[in-house]
Length: 143
Image (cartoon, rainbow, N blue to C red; front, side, top):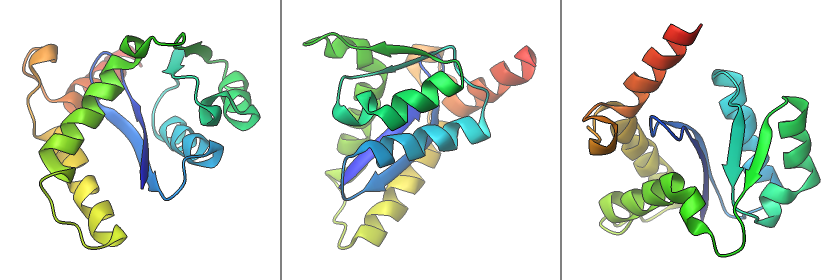
């Protein structure tokens, strides 16, 4: 299974995610569309140079919303450190220690973990605040 997610760089809030049995442009674009339907558009969207992110569909959606496209240079995984750190946290805090027996169980477990990550877990990198609470306060104050 593959996981695509959109995460806010500053607050660490997971804005949208989706699990799929294939990593393709549809997966990346679906997650981006979900995030854009729920939250204000970002100024910049950072990703790696995977074919799902460089695809016509994905880049067209970003351009349509006038979002600046930022992609890591080759060998520059540090540019995606926020999402990579989230994936590591999810794997070690949930996936590797759970004995999921089906895709349904996996999806339910990941959903519960992301809820906990966003709304219950304090993050040292953002002053021991909860990511989604911080994000929602931020967009409320900007509007």
